[in-house]
Length: 221
Image (tube, rainbow, N blue to C red; front, side, top):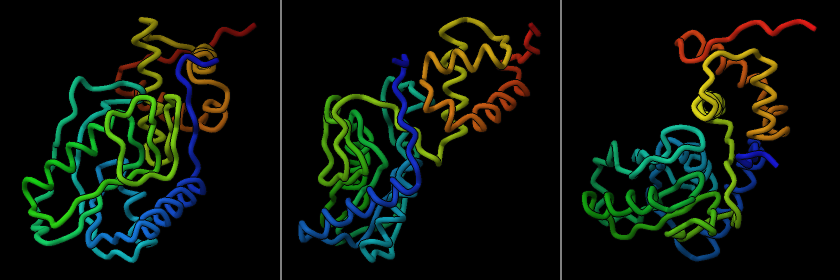
């Protein structure tokens, strides 16, 4: 088993989950007037929900929680709040995944305090119920055990974060590519390495140019 369980998410799954989420919202009999995407993970799911639900108004709020892949900040905070007047509007806040629930809770509180909405509800494609302190009003998929979901929209960011996690944990800043890939298999598993191989190489080159990781040639047999 890898040290960090990773599930690589496809765009087809995102479309399917967003459709399932939209269906649940419709079945509840509630219809939002405005959708608020939690930046940055909520952008794509929020846009898809606009399409499925026929909502034309889309704005965003940025809540900073995860500084890099599989790393958690000490405290989430609203970095860029919503400045629009949402008086009398039914607002749906959307994120890609809810783990602790801090992001959606902070976003909801911020919008209620500054934007004067009629009603605010929350939604996410997924919720990890084993760690969530707050469960959104609507979600498509329940995840019972913690997994790092690698979405397409932060593939390079994940790859760079995963490399730096290995570097920090091992204390090694100089790597042969083969050594690093073997470390990836141990840390993140075969599925991640196979499906994100190109992104790993791209992120490694970027980190190498920034002087954060040194890449050397592997010794020949």
